[in-house]
Length: 522
Image (cartoon, rainbow, N blue to C red; front, side):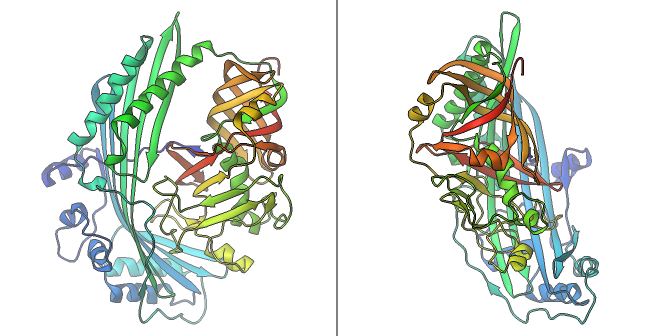
């Protein structure tokens, strides 16, 4: 399911304050031994770049150490192994009614070691990057295999990749006093936006990860991964009735992304979405035409359809799409992609968590199911190349096929044409909670806000309704797709098997001929 994830880190502490804060429970700190060097200095130093030497120094390793750990990982006959090193610095600062009331810290470091034998995976991790600790973890992961020892590589090739998230200033170099003004400005703009506003809150979350991945096929891959989210929420009161909503902006961006104009837009959207609910009604329920608003309505595409196209569910025969490759699943004007190359978008990746370069993968092309999303294991099973979809929450987890930015490409219709074609239906604008059964694709989603469509016109705002249906069936019922594609810019985190990863989604305005709407008298 999609959810909002709050990272944690408060920059700008002295070493003494940093340690003291951690002891008080305000920080989560994992500091391994760095072979006699000052561990805190190694963790908090500004990044020197993305050269092999820089990243080896950050993790206190070199190629000879990698080989030693791989020898232990392959000693029981694994086909393949990889080592995933990750150092993450996170920050959260929250403001409520003009007062900074929260600041959380997280500095995390460790390595995940995976051994693959056929389609079986052995996995272990350690926060201690000493050679003995990593060898012990490698031997734990190696227990999946039984046979003659495999060979570690004698040399490594450093993989060069494009950069899909260029930024000017890394968040690890931004102090708290540069962040708080954004929150104060949001607060002031929200209260100025409407006299009915009675409460406002704002939060800035940022996250920086340094990743180094080495595999037994002799590749070393490294990446510097920024992330930031600015969020505002508010409550309003009218005639004794209260409503609330929010707006946010998220991406693999630096602080320069949050311009005065963007801050103003976030505040205005939060206010508009909140006060519009005073005029909203709950419509009569039943089967009706549903128009999905361009942008964040892509969450329905992600949850109800996208998960069913992840290759592990199909390899295991769980997904309803398991036998649909090469077969029509939608109208010819429907094309759906999962893309890791969109510049600075939340779900984009320079490299997946197995060391595979990212790409645009066509899932549905001209209405035909063209591909699944593959990691290394599923690609081997299907005898295809990995699609760059092997992802993990952190070094504490093994990778699996996951979405990145999943969206439908523009179609041949116009938004006004789509609205005009609806006799009675709803325009679904903002989704919150939902539940999806991935095998069959059955779903229910809560629509926070939208509009009633009557005789081809948007009439009254609607709220607090559910839409209920089946993902593959809804895909077949997509009868119009507009040319107004929009990528959602919110902070979505997708959950699967206990792991959360950042994703995004997008959609043009889309008309579905029939979905069950849960309203009054339904």
